Image (tube, rainbow, N blue to C red; front, side):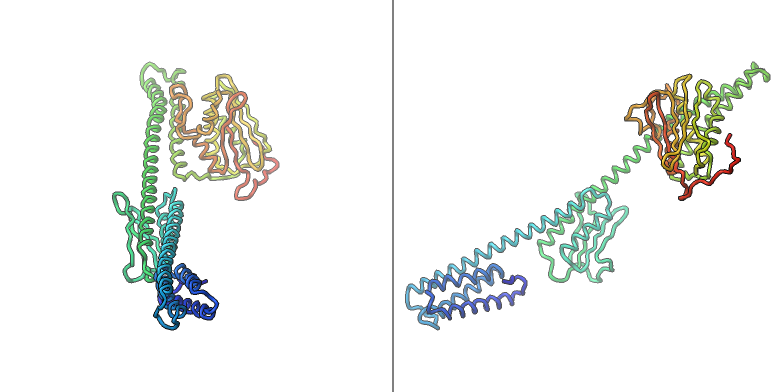
Length: 484
């Protein structure tokens, strides 16, 4: 039987009356074969169906129609509302009472079922909204989800969600201009201490019910919680950034001031000695003092260069000026400049001359080798070997710079490439803690990868650089090219 709830109130009564009329006609045709009590019981069937599908009021109306139809057509004398026998009067009264009670009970059951279904739908919609808002830290996404949920709930003409704040958010469905008339419903997105925004609804027919209004208010409360979580997360993120910035500033000041003081003290002492009268301009001491000034000036220049390069890496403006270069030439140039630092160590270089050209920035790659070799010389014991090896592996150049220094705990292998991260105390080994971070930034800017590993006899730094540049391999060197 088609549900009567789909029809208007007038049609509900018309259909109820028609059903009672058809039932009466059917029973009237069988009146000579049916007992009066049985007819009364059978009339309860259409009354129950009408109440179930049409509601309580149509059920009561059909019960009254049935009462008069039963009295008029099935209680003697027929075709009159008069009742001669007391038993028939009792049957009529009982029929009326049972019909009304049945309508009442069925109507209450239907109302309870409808309320339960409505609560279930509300709970489901609220759960879906809560699940969608969980973990969101973007106010624009919160506004979109809220607007779509409200639009799906009401199927209204127009929904608009406005969120106030430093960066206001406006979301509306459909993506057209709002109606010119005022909205039918406005609900504030209310937090504990302030109003975070509002929901505007244009919905002409049918009118928004109290249950729907209550549910939208609950939606607004959930959205307010999500917005507060998002703003707290953003505030926490900003606080962490400020805390990290403060920590880095302290680390920079502490490390740089310590590192700059040492070469400046040496330069100052050497310059003071040269200005004095106890140094003969032709003596070996003069040569040593000038060499000290030159070396420490180079050290200062490297420190300042590392700081500048680190700032470029952080700003994302460190762009390699790539050219096809010979890896062996880059390494040999670095070794020549570092000879004075490696008087107590030995270098072993294993870089085949037949290696293909690599598309790298010559100066930046020199800096990578300078930082890696400086780190190895700094930590490796005296009279040990520092090795450099390069080979081709799966379309990349794989370089290994190893030393016989102490190994690093596994937990620190990844972190040694972080800015200012130091394993050894600063009073034992000098340095700013920027060298390996700069190496990582340069290698990654070249599309490569860098990592550290513990070796059997020490520590190794690995990095790879792609052999392809814009999808093209290296050009062939002339046959008479020699690598010194």
